[in-house]
Image 1 (cartoon, rainbow, N blue to C red):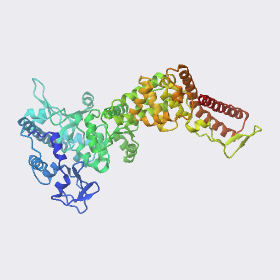
Image 2 (tube, rainbow, N blue to C red):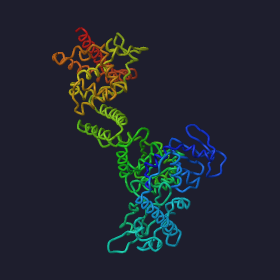
Image 3 (tube, helix red, strand yellow):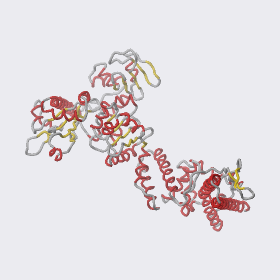
Image 4 (cartoon, rainbow, N blue to C red):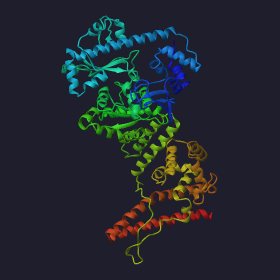
Length: 629
């Protein structure tokens, strides 16, 4: 019978789980969920929860977990197909007609589960026998307790090429080959894949063994000759890119903690579990795949990648970040925890204990932080070319994001950081302080004296209405061609609030993309990108009468006026960039005069004051000239 995952999901979606369970168990509403005393173990206080939205039940006492089908099989005792048929009838759905090929595949998988279960029992028995002594010594040296050994099903594959076939002689050789236990070579008898190795079973979400990882033991020469870890090959049961190690234990644990930790390998996962971190999984010899990320998101909205502190681990983290970006969606992302250089999670636990690992996890950074930190570390920003390369790399990541809203937020966030760093390294760089209040002034006699207050810098009454920064941005909206001439200076402009900073950043991005420097095209794109309100406000507010901030002064037919407007825009932009630097220097020299008065400091202060007055007068002149027209 061809019961596709899509059909089963549709069946679950048509059912109300609390109603099904409520027929045999008393349930009570508890916020968005329902609660009950668990029917799978005796309890007096309800720890059994039912979530109709997500379609699952879970007991925080005994760990029972499942959906409507699982409820029918585990609680009602029905077979899988009987459960499906009963639920389909209730949901008004027809069960798909029998498919002989699908039935044959299902039978084949069932038989392979039997093979894997029998092999796992044999490996576990070997670990406790005479041949397993060396493996037991290794586990003892690693500090892995007997309880953890039993929980994770450690075993041992003795050295030899024909052991598994003899031990599992009830199964045909082709089944052992298909399960990945035997290697078949043309013209030779099949032989054991795992020989002289500590065996670690890999289980599916239902706890069934589907594959193994084998850690080599024995002589040093052999360890140098063969791979340290050997995984089962892909089989009908096992696909390493679609499987997470320890998912059977981590799924229940993560529902209690609301967290999921992703480490590099299964020995790391086992070490964390022994230290109390049971909400942990690991990929299987590959970088985290898109499918594994999707599996992790079903357990936690923001899984934490805690990979080794060496270069390989950090590169693996970046590969995971790049794979996550195209598939992120609202509320779901990744976090990244940085281990100390050269340490893996097990090393950190051994050296500093669980508290140190908790600190590392609590200091994890977001996906956007990881992208930014990685790309910034690759750049020196010493030349315009290197700055452009960083910007291109950041935008390359943004372009991979399929979700348009998230892509927009990433673009704004990364560009804010980019322009902040570029400004700090620009020749126009200046301190960020924008305070205009002075606590000192010169007396009429030229002596330095304190005053209780002094007026903030006000360039003119027109600046009070709109502000130089707003005027400059409105000028670029009216004359987009000026972007190509003054982009570097615009990059250094301190916009003084987030809204204007984002608009400035987008104008620079628009320029870098080679978009048409046409006013109508620019304003149309700004509306599409969410800047319509701020751009309209700036264009309407023409109270500051600069030549470049008034529509009636600018037109292609009035080339002379247009040229003058561009020259005025350049000058006001230069002043707007330089002013905060002058103000910050004035404050610093003011403090210096207050603490250690000197002729040099006095002369420096007077020079800066003169520059400030000149800026103020020039702004007033440009505004008055435009107003008089």
